Amino acid sequence: MLPANTLAAISNVVALNLEPQTTMAILSAILAPVLPDAGKPQPRAGRPRSKPRKAPQRKRKKARQRMAAAHAGEPTDSQRQRAARALNANPSVSLTRVATIAGVSRSTVVNARSELEAAARKEARREARKLRENPVLAKQTERRARAQRFLKDTLAHGARQVSDVEEAAVKAHVDPTSLEQARADLGIVTSRGNTGNTLSVQWSLPG
Image (tube, rainbow, N blue to C red; front, side, top):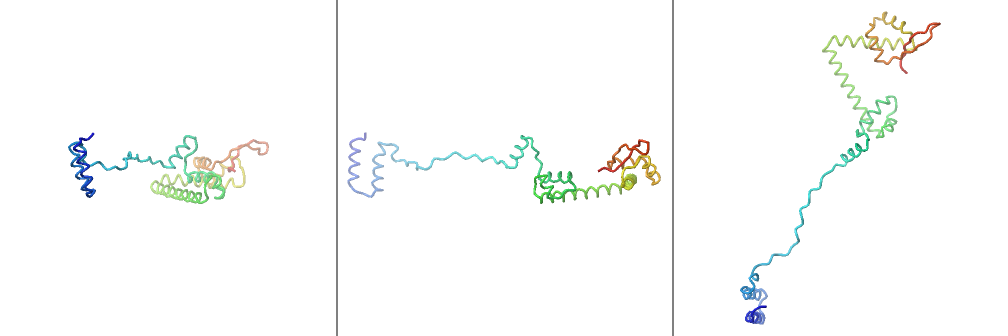
């Protein structure tokens, strides 16, 4: 409750009909002794400060997909890797069919084939450089390649007895070591067949 003299002073000021700002200034001076906080400026009302937002964690969609696939036991290889495997497993199949097998687009198969061809050329250049730098290795490689050509020509028309092939290899100057290496390289098929009344071992080309 304000003192009587303070109330009377307030009434007198109000009755003067002064400018609002002048009236407020006089009232503040009158109330200051009675209300210590009357003369102090009140803080401006504003919006409450919100808590700072935490930066959202960036999760890449592909990373989540790879993680989910790994947990599910599915392969996480890229589409081009799948296309490359399908190309290697189906060398005589059309690119459209390879795309269907791998579950990718035909353009992906084309790009994968280009990468495989580039890798093959790079490997061929590396092997050629090795041969130039190592004459002994070059000679062995040439013997092996010649033995492969010999087996392909000799078995081109069907299976032949191993003894006949080895005899022909001697005449063609193909050494036994190179012949065995070429046989393994080509995947020569060994079988048994009857020649007259004799059971003999034969070699034939695969497929």
